[in-house]
Structures are given as C-alpha cells and as structure tokens.
Length: 167
Image 1 (cartoon, rainbow, N blue to C red):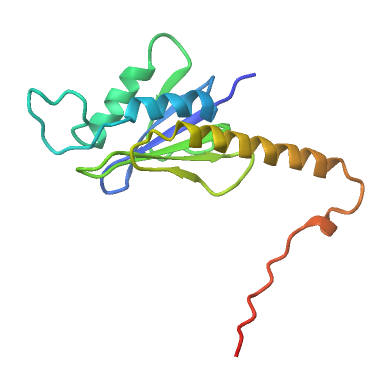
Image 2 (cartoon, rainbow, N blue to C red):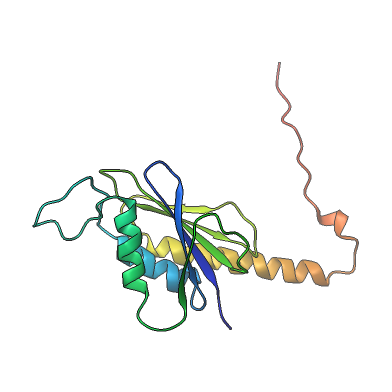
C-alpha cells in the first residue's frame, strides 16, 4: 500500500515556500528517516565560502537541495506551490530553520490526529522517528478496537475536567 506524505518547507520568517509530495514510502521510518539523514549535522547559513559544501545558504537553498536529493526519476516525488492543502496524505512533515541553526522537522500523522511530534536539534533522532511511528500504530490499533465495541461510544469519550484550585 502507498503511504503518501507531504513535506512543507518554511523560510526563516516561517512562511511556507514549497510543498514536496511523495506518493510512496512516506511513513516516518521511510521518508522521515531519509529527511533526518539528509539534514543531519547541517546548518542554515547566510553566505558561504568555497570550503562550505555541507550547509544550506538559507531555507530556499535547503528546499532546492532536498528536491534534488529526493527526485531520482519519473514519478513518486512532485513539487507543489506553497499553500496547497488536503492532498490525501497520511503524514505531513514540517521543515523549518533559522540562520546559524540546524533545521528542525515536525511530523504529523493526518489519519491519527495527534499533536505534531517535534524532532529538533541535531536530527540524529532516528530512534525518535521510529518511536513516533510505533505510537501512531498503537493509536490506530486502539481506534480499531474502539470501533468494534457495540457499547455506545460516549461511554469511552474523555471529557476535560477543569482544575480545582486549592484555597
């Protein structure tokens, strides 16, 4: 089965600059791992010298390098304009960066709406990506079991109970 994903890349002012759509292998253990390896130990810089071949000269440079890295032939990887939504993806990856810092990746599973899981810092967090995938799978299994129960579902819904302040 195809696991579709999109990668949203943002500039230094946090404005979305492009969307990369991946038709297959978009799960965290595939696309997420590939993104983490590609970004590992690299920084977003403002200007570079002849000896600087491992960093990104701004987020536009990062986007261009990532597209060149991912696109190895016909199909599977597609480029779309910023702002496009609802592309029938299962996972969304958000890549952001600031000058002088290493880029960050956030992952969100669209089918199991949980808060986006953030992977920051040096991005050697490949184990964290796998952990997110495992948690998402557990949540999917919980939902499958939950949907098979014949008891009214309202019994199982969690309600927010306001905090009681002590005098």
